Image 1 (cartoon, each protein chain N blue to C red):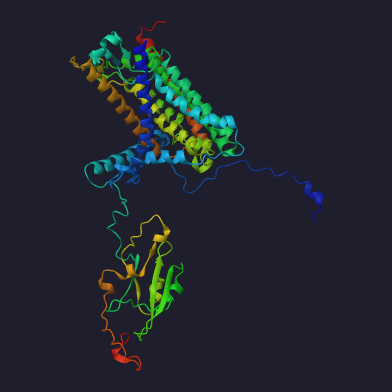
Image 2 (image 1 turned 90 degrees about the vertical axis):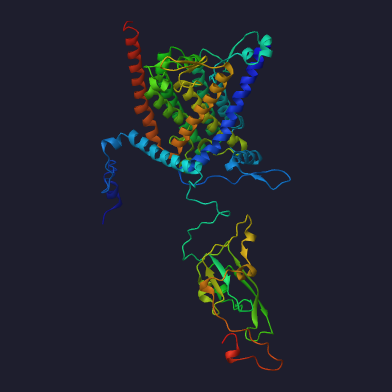
Length: 214
Length: 382
């Protein structure tokens, strides 16, 4: 056991003189590079070269930039796997295939999907249908979980970008109408059975091959 | 008396219009040049809509400067509680005014004879001629340095009176940096003063219209290439721009000595910086690039190295000189912006080491070599 007074007799700790640490990947520079000025001039030469090249492209009527002027021009080089816009698939009569089960809205990590369900007594196979189906694109993270969750294959994403350029976040909502008017790409084209005949009053809803969900 | 007054007013108006135009234009040039250098398109959103139509004038984003100015004018004039009222108010003016005043001694054209230009006014002017220069002072170059010295006070005043530690540090840095580089700038120009034997900028420009070594125009950049390089370096440092923007280093000091300024006061600091780019360009043009004269040109016309003389009319000479001067200044501005967007910032100790241990000895060496050469050419006697 060392007494406290013994501790105080210890010589004061002197900090070691500062020595710059040598790293294994210390950059080695030649005399030419350490002269600083030639390399500075070389760097200026590089940037000036790029400037003149791009400037010449602009002057001669070509594009001297790799960026694009977004809402007016769209990039042509989106990857084929890009999935940037939601669409709602449709039944042959044009009504959305969505049954307003709220699975996508539940699984959505960003909580951007809002569905308002309605009741359609004329279609007993799908009595529930969406009155309102909206996605807030200002918050969507494009994770695609809604597509995986959907039991009806009613929502999909296609290689496109939503054209929602706006100065106002309340214009960033994609409505059902916009999601239903998509171009029928090959991957979403799907054969559907014909629309069921509306049931006669008093009879049970059609089951079997006559149903649209068979 | 009256003709002199009228011509002075015309020159002053011209100078102020040119400087403010340069200040506004350079904000655009800086943005666009940086964009083109880095494969981007650059600012192109601000537009002016012609009233009652749907025609939007974009003009490559030229109106962004106007939008900036309007924004700064309309912003809240925020003042920190701890500010010193007098210093805080004076600092932007002390920074801005000398920058405009420096241009007074810079000649922007040759000698003008209004009577020859407009014969109907010849009787009024009575054959008087005017050099295109606001103030033809014998001490031209000294005035330049005197006024750029005043700018230092403004920067330090802004840093001290804001009552902010970042501002104070920025002001201190601005003071030490600008004093160091002011010295280098003065010493580099000493070589030129030895050669030309005068500090009057008008005379310096006139002496550069001759021919040197048979083919080269007798420009300062060919007589003193080394001094030209040192001068440009020191001038950029004096202007506190990257790679020497230590006083306003964003990553260290927020915005340096004008951290606590807002609205148009902050705009004045920025505007002074942009006008100073043009001023540095004008000084470099005047001292090293033959001023307003095109190569081999003087007030009478061209005298090419082969002995050929091409006489030009007075009006044409004046137009060539005015346009030539502006073109050279613009070229130097573009060079400075190119440097600003290419080089990384110095560390603070590196910046001071660069000034005192490299640039100062080099400029002294340059001065010494020039003095020896001048002494030998004058016969080597005392």
